[in-house]
Image (cartoon, rainbow, N blue to C red; front, top):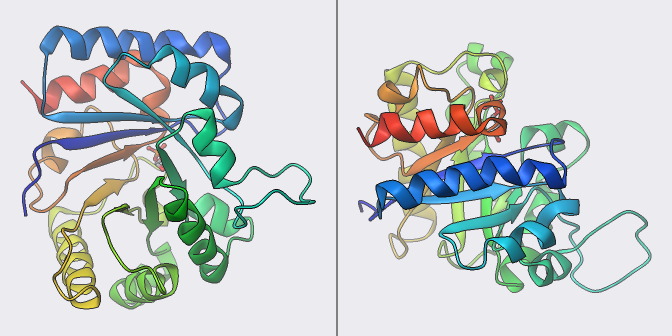
Amino acid sequence: MTYKYKYFIANWKMFGDFSSFKIINLVNNYINKIKSKKSRIIFCVPSTLISYFSNRLKKSNIFIGAQNCHYLDEYGSHTGSINSKMIKSAGAKYVILGHSENRIEGDTDNLINNKIKSAIKNNLVVIFCIGETLNQKKQNLTNKILSMQIDKGLRLVKSLNKIIVSYEPVWSIGTGKIPTHKELNNAVSFIKYKLNKKFNNKHSVKIIYGGSVNVKNIGELITIQGINGFLIGGASQSAKKFIDILKNCYK
Ligand code: 13P
């Protein structure tokens, strides 16, 4: 299924303070100017900024997301943690889960699965990150890893309505390297096949790509069949770079 718009999702990671709203403001001015209905712009910001930014964006076409959440959705003794209910009440509509940077810090597939279920229960849309490491790629294990991450991460998840799958090869994050056209085509087709099989073709599948997306490679990336958008790290921390990416998609 083709989508009516493409997702451009900023993952700010550990970046930003209140003054960083000016970046979003400039992006907002740009999308208002071009009046494009073809894109959905989401900024996944640190938890400290969710409430303030969401309030300021109430009348805009930009949405706010979180970058992680606790797996429990009740209050509890978990010092330093924030759950999906709290994220939702702060104004976020989306949450990134399963990012490789969090997997490296200890998020297992099982934990990610519990976080996903809690986020869906609280009506957040999940940006579910999957991807192979360089070693796994060299051993031709890409499909096996993607399949395993999907099976474990989406265990007992009944619908894809609130899931956007982000294919993020670990070796492409922050390295400037992106998969070849063929590699990306294969991975995206495989993810689509896998999700359709798992969910009996009942739900539409949304797949985005993340990893070193920039103004130089977006022209090529946008031509890949079946990609419904992009998860953008470093380049989303600059209004100019983010807007240039958008410009290259809509010129
Ligand atoms: P970069 O765009 O900085 O490679 O980061 C990608 C990423 O991790 C998005 O989630």
